[in-house]
Picture (cartoon, one colour):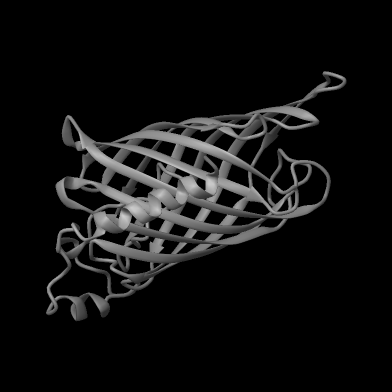
Length: 287
């Protein structure tokens, strides 16, 4: 089954599920009240929406940080590897964090920084190995929710721009793109989400750039108790320059220590040889 038809099956099957979504939106009298909060007039703690971080999945959350509040999400540690036509790469990434600030009730700014990375590259024809270390790229994002920030069906748009501050990659370049996540909170604590994404990224080798199109579907549900969530996700990314696609399967466990603190562990596995593979553990909390 091709990547396109796999995604369409998930997409169309979701329409039946959305009609079962429970109605837990804010009362109409409370919605205008939350709209008046901003960076300098923060949302009161007793009015905060449910904690819904972007991690641990590739599919982002369409829900924003409440106005005037800060949210921190990070990989404690991420190990990733991949094999290209020219080389084999292994990398350890430490404290790759996403710092978020709620500007209004439906708009948040995000700063993503790779604190430190160690990457080893082996050239396949000569078997020469090189190791680089240092600070990673810096990414600036905006998340604008257009539907259901306090409801059970939500949609957002997330443009981003990456600055080439990378010290462990000789081919670091300016990159950018836009993400469009949509989420459904269903009956019996089921969660279903999708994402469509377009990116302008650097090539794996050389100084060229290429465009990538990504689509994902993610499903989650509590296991054992309501504090422990299990997620399963599949996605594909299509390289419009090379005209090839990589398919992935991801899984993660996320445990809620409190209403505002979560920890997680998971993996991303690519089906193709040239696809990225990763294992990670991380945290998310808000203030």
